[in-house]
Length: 428
Ligand code: HEM
Image 1 (cartoon, rainbow, N blue to C red):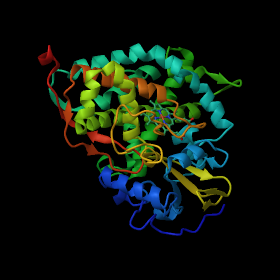
Image 2 (image 1 turned 120 degrees about the vertical axis):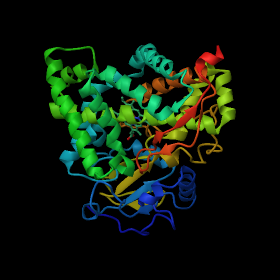
Image 3 (image 1 turned 45 degrees about the horizontal axis):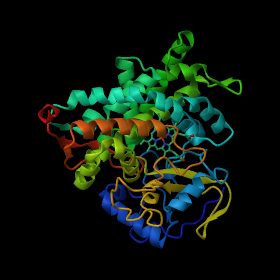
Image 4 (image 1 turned 180 degrees about the vertical axis):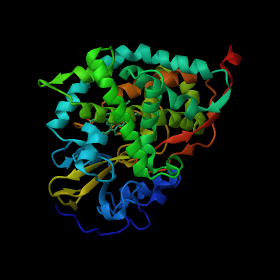
């Protein structure tokens, strides 16, 4: 395995994508930095990331960045050259740990195809359409609970709660302490970069504790479902076969970690970002409120483009290759920056404008296509559509003040979002 010598220790002049301080900057400053990179140095090299998970002596690899939409799409669709098998977050761990935390998102074919195949049917858009009424019911019930409060922290009262309820029902998580603990672990796992979440623990402790809790849940539930099948995804996973093979208990545990985190931590941040975006852009809120059924689909796509709950995924080059004239060596880390591709001025006109009527809107928030394209995209879209339709029909003047953002290079999250709205009963 060879590693290319870095041409620059920082990526480009003052822009240092590896610095923790870069990810604590306001979003507009980070966006401005990526704009410079796209224009002047679209495939920059960075020193090893300032890691919250690994000590410097174990975190020795820098990374190439893909900042252009076209390059991210091409790499996402070329898994033979851009492999996921060494993991998709910045740091490389021992393969056993990567597998326990990241499941098949960190695998290549044929194993990826096999494990994804077992779970794929459950997430097909056709099945999601069947679930649409059920998801709408969850969204309606939740807005019933808050509509007359008139004020509250939207991120805590709503954004965090809806995906968790949907996840619990779909997976058949038991009511009570075990279900609460599992959801809480899913919500905590990706916050290992956030100083407030970590408190006096290290990022690695946060990640390891959360992962262990979720695996324990799987270890308890899977034998129960094999003995007494239910009508839920845990039963599906426990019994499903692909090419005559069942998933092992560890594989189910790892899948639960990955999908639990994916289900709880992404749609949640997108919905909080949505309220923030409409509060910053009252003209767009007015447009939506005038015709919610007619404009909600476009609004959801634009929210996904602008909110990009995951800033990046990583790949590892399996062979020497060239991107935009830049040589990349076999074994080098390559990071796909969705947050940058979604603002690429070669693809999106006026990319910093939040425009719910934008068409076409080929954002790469769910990945750039290819074998790892988000399995939950249809579920996420349906959840956001249901929730935001309820919100902008029933409490349409909701306005959020300054959000409290999660700090870190992976999740583009909102922890708290104080908001006010006219109580629903006052509109009647
Ligand atoms: C707004 C919400 C969401 C966003 C932004 C998002 C984003 C992503 C991204 C960027 C990827 C990686 C794509 C790639 O590497 O090419 C991914 C993969 C994945 N997502 Fe999502 N996701 C969301 C919601 C969900 C939900 C609700 C679920 C499931 C309940 C889910 C399950 C998965 C799974 C299982 C994978 C791995 C697919 C594979 O490797 O084959 N996601 N998602």
